[in-house]
Image 1 (tube, rainbow, N blue to C red):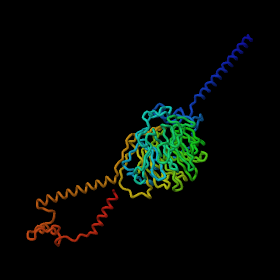
Image 2: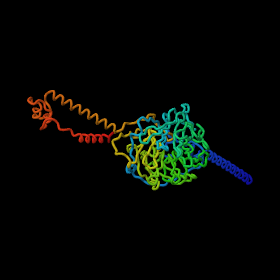
Image 3: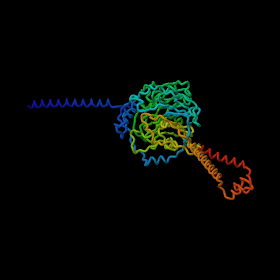
Image 4: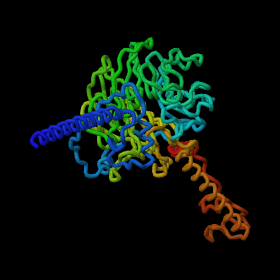
Length: 550
């Protein structure tokens, strides 16, 4: 019995060991499977990992998955734990925004009304000082424009037939030259380098192009990426922007999918690249370095030898050493919010970043968060906002890019909806303000999808407030004059003029006949000599008064 019991015990022990070994093997296998199928941050990460306030079943889920699709620099499996430092509490964002000064005056009559535009995606300056813009004409980036593999779905439409690049005279807004017909499919970024070459990105073609000054013969001098083939490595996936150093080396923001920045020699040889894809859903005062949620625009800070990138969906600007890509600094402000679309640098006032933010993100935003869409001026020294600006001191709807002159006196903002280019002049140089037509507020604007730039297909230019006022005054004067003439004519026909009895008797006295001097109740007959000088002064005064509203 003992032996049997021992045998049974041994059998039980062996069974237990066997079961334990099997259980351990199963656990190891399951753990291995979990590790193998764990998705990369940049591809199929659950939206709730980033956006704790989003229902994973809503329509935004598909958009987020599309925006996170990609490979290359963002395809690593490193899990990023975003820090949660306490933010500075602002009791009322609306009140704090109202405290910011408006240091730029809006030129609502610029550009000329005969300039017809599609969604304006980028703005820069050529060597002559012209404002060079990139626009989509009749193309709209919608939810079905790309599939889940980032393949462009409207190639059958062919390239845009009209000019996509326009150069506008800065004073009048008249078109100086245009080019870019029958080449681009979905324009995005534009930069004019120190040698006047034009660099453009097309998110549909997944390519970067360098054109000679003013477009040359319409053929690019340099092309990077494979047409309509998204990818990583030496391919791009929806590249967004280019910045060019004085020596000809240049940077490309490979934005929507790969979330990386690449540096090339002037001949197009890859030097280095950095960046990983991550999407926090909200902005942070302190955030991990070198991680991007759509590097959407680039600008250079020559004095500090920095390259700065607009980290769009993380609501911040990250700056790196242009020599080797080492992280240098970042700029963020809660008044700007969780989305920062573009920025431009000016050395004015010790170095400033001119920034445009975007409408409240559809993903991961707290309902109680208040958001206003403005242009902002941020001091790089203090990292504080200096001022804000907007059309007629109101808000933008969907600004996409911004450019500022080196002296900081003029700012130009490219907007998707409404489809137009805006001009602002520093208040110290602006002419006296007059009544102007206010644009429609952003309340009726069509929301912009995070993964694309969706806009309506019609641009409307409103008449100037000055023109409306002058026309109204002219009509009022003409109507009043006609009414008075009619009254005088009727009273004269009845023999009853609007003057005193003595004057009427004196004017129509039979013995002396008609005397106009008597009709005007003069003490002497006839008229005084016309004071020509006084009439000129009066006319000049009237002309000047009218000119203020012209």
